[in-house]
Image (cartoon, rainbow, N blue to C red; front, side):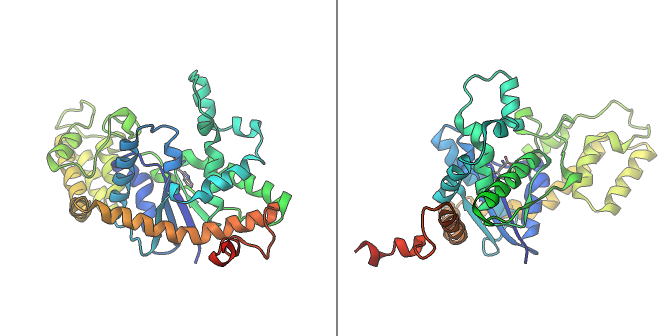
Length: 338
Ligand code: TRP
């Protein structure tokens, strides 16, 4: 069975764009792959400097995944900060990466172009930590959004450099990018994103969700006139959730005329409520039992450590920190310390 790994930033309660862009894919994959999924809370410290917010956003994203059907018995689900291996391997890779290599990263270039003065070393180093995240688990595939493509390329480069310098250690992972859902439009037609305040919040109370859907911006074509579905945000969102037959039926209504955008929005809202009905119920139930969520992540970390620890052990032998007969587990056994 092929192994996949992905990480997600704890950016709070996820919206429809997060779900369609990445979460759905992560959850579906647990059927056919050996899956590792973690909350990238080390990366999040580059932006989130408030402990209560860090904790809440981590909880929110974990809760959403579990509500949406992530099965912790199938997917090893954990948070990055619970494993010291990520930061340790990051350092080792730091010593192989050059400054110009990192200066090519889009996120760094954007920050520079925007004239940001206080760019932290953490932000600069972000891609190396991501490479460590990935390489520790020796995955075959890394499912990510289009915006992460460069990070995967950098990971492949670093793995190749390490393998050349110290011998074959890391599997070279392949990115898996689902092109057709790469951009989910928000209520104003731009890419759906918290920073544009144009999101549809799948776990919001029904009245709020309704307000968001009814607020989708459409053009001013008169009710009786035929409309072009392909340019309409309501239709584009519907298409992402509905079956091809349902989508075709909605397109026919647009083209026939005498069908207003208000009608289309009602159809979209019903679809969203139907699609997320059981997830919304599970969400509200799980929310009442916060400790069970932390426990799931703790268990995930224990399972993740088995493989991350093994890889780091191997790396330490390769680099010359340990000899092969003196691996970490033996070294730190109670007998040895006594
Ligand atoms: N940078 C990714 C994002 O913002 C999150 C991430 C961190 C990640 N480490 C990863 C994704 C490792 C895939 C694999 O979406």
